[in-house]
Image (cartoon, rainbow, N blue to C red; front, side):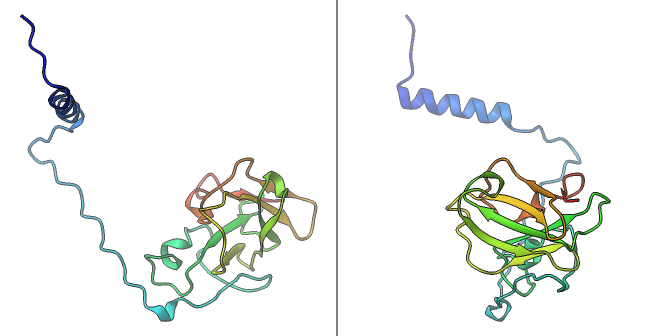
Length: 172
């Protein structure tokens, strides 16, 4: 005679077996995973309005701006969109303009326009409908016809989170 487990007990047994199979083996000398850092308590005084502009200055071109200027950072300004544009020579591009629009390649409604500063950085603390509205980034040159765009939408304004190392946004 065949014995079957009731459905809830069977599902629980399968779940435990799956977890056991996926659990990494710990041997002597293995260290527990590091504890994540505690969330930072931002002072309200840090939440000042900032927006990049042509000829202005900033710092840390190519780094994830939102690491310091985001909800868990201690830099002034709580950025909603930030990133860096580069020339083909891999130098920060001070002639770039970022557009966020509702359709690919700058089509549809342009929701945000930001000028890169002297370090190629663009950023704003202004309201942006991300992540509720998916937007399409396009970077264009202020001095030529050059442009670059993402063919798919994004739900994040943290551009340098992905566009770092060998994935920068090139223009010209």
